[in-house]
Structures are given as C-alpha cells and as structure tokens.
Length: 579
Image (cartoon, rainbow, N blue to C red):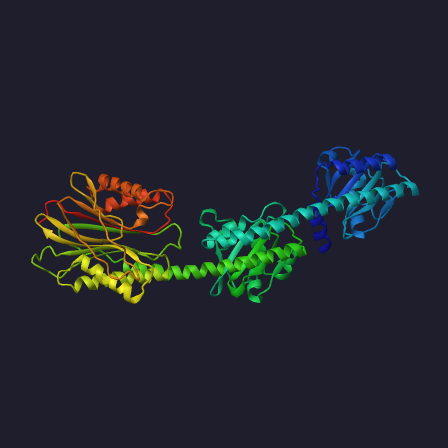
C-alpha cells in the first residue's frame, strides 16, 4: 500500500493521467521507430487502471480512452517486480496468457522497461508491442532501455518542478499565515482567513478548527458557508476513534495517508464518516494549551513531505496564538459588555412622557465599554402626578474594560451628586464629578450631558449642562429641529474644577428630545456636523411619532454603514395635551 501511495502521489505531481501528453507521445513514437513495433505505450499504473499519456499505433476503442482496466495490463507486472518484462509470445507465457490484453488488444509480443521517479519507485513501463510472436534482439532491448531511462528523467523533472511549485506555495502559505491570522477578529473570521491561505497544489479539500469544550471537540463554523463536513459532525467526543480526537488525547500530530490507514487505526464510524464526506486522508495538529485541534483533509491519498509537515505544523502554531488571543479578548469583552448592559437600565414610567432607548454595538467587537444613558425620577415635589426627571447621556474616552468601569462610576456619581444637592442642579452635579476625576485619577476623561425635566404648564422645562458632548436635538411639534448648542469642557483628570453652566428651554406637548453619543454622528471620513444634520433630518421626519419609531429610523440610518464606535441613544417625547 505504501508503494501504491508513493506512486499515486508521484503521478499526481507529474500531472499525467489518461489524456494525451505531447512529451510522452514523443517517447512512444521514438519507441515505435527505433524498436520497429506497431504499438508503443508510455503506460503508468494508477490504483485501479493503467493510463497511456504517451501512445503510438494503439487501435480504438482503447486509443480514444487512453486507459484499460488492470485485467488488460502487463504494466502492473513490471511495477510489481521492479524489473523489465520481455515476452516473445504472451500466449505461451504463464505470467501473461490469462490476460485479456492478449485477446482484446492483440498484445502477442511484449517488452516493457520500468519508468521510475527520483526515489526509485516504479511508476509504470515504456512498452513495445507486436501483434505476432517476436524474438527481441539485444539492440532492440537496449534501445528500449535507453529510451525508458530518458523518459524516467523527464518524469523526474516534472515531479521536481511540481515540488518546487509546492515548496513555493508552502512558503507563501507560511508568510500569509503570519500576517493574516494575526488580524482575525473572532473565531469564525479566523477560520475564514485560514481557509483562504491555501491555493494551488497545497490546497486541501477541507480545513477545520475544533475547540475543546469539556468532553467534546466542537467545530468552529462560518455561519454563511457551513460545509457538509461540519453539518454532519458538529462535535466529536474526546474518546471517539477519530484522528482528530486521537491528536487531542495524545497531544501529537496524527497523519492518515489513505483509507487503509484509516480503517486499520480508527473506528468504523470514522471510516463511514470520511467516506460519506469524500475524504481519504487527513493531518491533525493539536493546539497549544489543549485548546483544540486543527485538521487538514484531502479527497484522495496524501503523502506528506517534510517541508509540508513543517509548514502545516507552523501554521497550527499561528492558529494557537490567534485562538488564545481571541478567547482572551472575547472573555474580556464579555465581562465589559455584561458590565455595560447592567448600567443600561430600563427607563422609568413618567406620566406625560414617552421614552425609548437604544444601544448599538460597534461592528468591531473591540469597541465596547464607554457609552451610557440614564433616566430616573426625583423624589416627589409639588406635583405628585408629574415628578421631576433626570436625564444623562455620556461617553467615557476609551473602549475597554477600564472604560466600562469608569462609565459605571461616572453614572453612579452623577446620580449621587444630583440626589445629594438640594436644587438638583445639573451643572453642580457635573462639577462634583469633575472633582472626583481630579481626586481619583479616573482616566483620560469623559463627555456628558446631564439634564433635568420639570413639569411646566402643559409641557416640560428642560435644564441642562453639557460637558463637551454633542448637542442634544429638540424637535418642536411643527417639525423644526434645533441644536441645543453650547458646552463646557469635558470631564478631565487633572483639569481641576472648571465652571459649569446651565441652559434652559421649554418642550411643548408633542415636542421631542434626542440625546445621543458621538458614534451616531461621527464617521472616519466625514464631518461631525454633517452627521448631526443627518440625525436632525431623521428626527424631523420621524419625531412626530413614538420614540420607538424614531429610534428604529435612526438605527436604520446608522446600519447602512459600518459602525466604528458604539452608540447610545435616548429619545423622549412630550405626550400631546398632557397635564
């Protein structure tokens, strides 16, 4: 079986099969001319047939097919023995007289010389054939042997040239892997990039990543391109008799060269599954830290050279690093997202007001942690039916765990500062947070709008203070939108306690207020004022309806381009004619 695998691999690299090849046909014609025979063949032995890439004088239907089954092949006798086969009359020789080649192809006299690769593996035979008995002369056999040697050299050059191409492809794979795999954003992106590394002669039929999950190996799939291999077997138990499971258990590379090795070394489930998936060979490499297994699989027998094994093992090392980094980032992001979600609480139910909120994560999962909104009623005052309401929106500089922690602190400090001040002034609350930033060293800074809503006739009175944040947008019932301009310095570590100012305006029944973070209006290639104008247009068009409808329209506008930052939005509408 090893010899068959070597021969199959060599023929694959030589690029020769049951089709005409100009160089091989030339050797057949030279044999016919020098040895003076009616039929000459360059016959190569595949697993279940002999093929004739070189041919002269063969009759139909075999000439058109350029192949015969093995029961019509004398070439297999040359391959099996590794020596020339010279028969004056095949009908009389016990080795050949039972072959259908005698009756069907009229092979009566036969002389075949071995064709070999550089390692000495016999790939087939250069054959001289006559349709009548013949005593082969020493000169004819020497000429045939010399031509076979030349033909072998041609085969070896082709195989070597293909190997050079493979080595070049492998070097390209290693170079691309060092760059591409380090750029992966998540596990599915890692698998996508991994599969795009391979092309040409190095391209496997399937590349798969399995990660350890308790007693299982679980496949990482691309949701948009789930392959049959993945659908049929999404998980593998660690004690299963599969090559990938063995690689994981024994923490070593596992190579399965062909079906015979698979059947001999693994369970019937593995053999059945490989056959159903059209796989015949595989190379499995465990990831560092017992994270999982990387698997390459091919649709035919696969002989792996030292260079290829080294390259694929090195790629597995890059994958191990990428998996480790991705899982670490996902864990940190998961904690940050949970912390951020805990801060984004549900809105209170306030008579006379409709409110809605949205949090839109960035397209890049690394951009998480800093944006927040808040809304809470103050203790009852003069109008028990319509309590005062505090509103906040802000953005801590940075997108990481620290930003998420600082966001939670700022939000809590604003609440405490508001509730602890008799007048509940937004500006005073922001000054208190300034002092905390200065004293506690909370980080590079934050922006915020802190506002208070007081019942005022049929509508509400808005008092706000802006610490370096994009301006709120106010829509009046007639559809006009105004920027609530004016802001002070952002909240900064080491800035002392700057002056904070307040502004006041009324919101009539049917009016709407939009608070948002900069991710809604900023684009890397655009001006923030253009983004604010865009948001104002959406507010003008949809602010007359419910806040939910408005935020759906805003989400649709934002979703039309990739988000480079997360977005927090708080929308409020005064119920028409509310008292």
